[in-house]
Length: 187
Image (cartoon, rainbow, N blue to C red; front, side, top):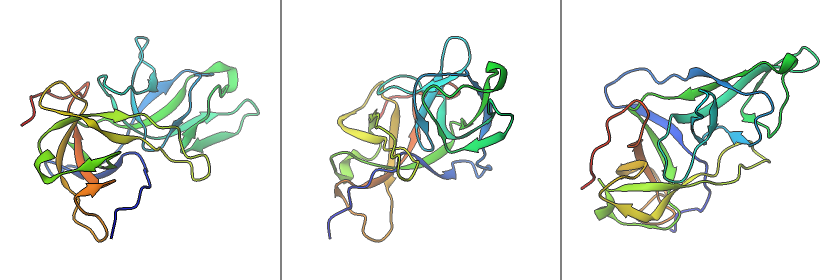
């Protein structure tokens, strides 16, 4: 059976050293003009606020959700930061981000994955979030597999039913170009 083409962005799987997987707080500027959904790759702007990640840039981590006070005074927790959201008194919102470089993630490949790709590095296809379900559609950009200077490191094919080597495979990755990690060459 072929793998299902259903990108869901980055889903935390485990911690390489047995640690606890938890998000940390970072500011998002009120009225920030981009959508960021749960599972999206994010980075830091020069002013220290969270912004949407890029295809091949250094990553802070993976977005989990956002908390803010709406202009009517209601406290909101959302899985998506909606483009241009204005907070009460234009205060920064709190983004929750999985930022530990030892967290591994499940992510779908946007092409054909081979067993020989384990250990290689790859960039990310930055997707448009799924507005129906409120999650990321980021994927591993299979055409960028190489041994140097890429965002992700492929650890393995995820072993679960209906997932096999081939097109649209789900793989386990770690962020290689992490703000808090050490970047090494791939195999």
